[in-house]
Length: 166
Image (cartoon, rainbow, N blue to C red; front, top):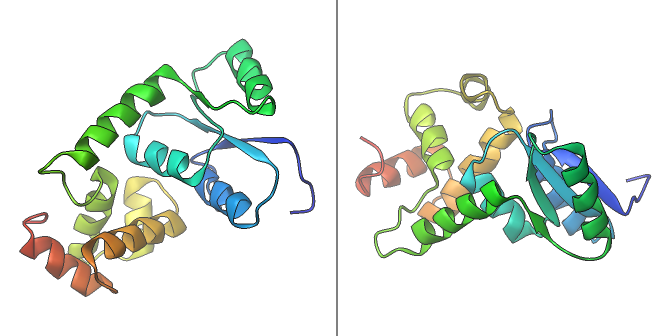
């Protein structure tokens, strides 16, 4: 990165690389930039991933200007800012992931894997789900890790064996 801002305000769904990928790169490079992500929807899996990766703030795009400015100021002070919708979705995701019969894969990972099982390429899945092909590959990679496999065919087979796919 040529510039090293104190705070970066990024859209989760921006074109490649998406906001989560930029966050992961900032963390990987150990840059001092604190990242606030904006999302148009309260989808729990990306929120969970962002928080696990070290996001400094996560807001919904409907937030007004004052809320966004206050969040930037709080993040500069070293605080973490999560919108109420994000807190609620995160709490639900934590309950789901920690429950005794918790699904092994997130909703989005299952959705991507279902399309993959139907024979769709990463590009086709991306078009159907309105996400980037890189994001599709990221979801597949997470699914591979969780299922303990290394490729698409094995992931589909293992998910079917566990009753996650029909």
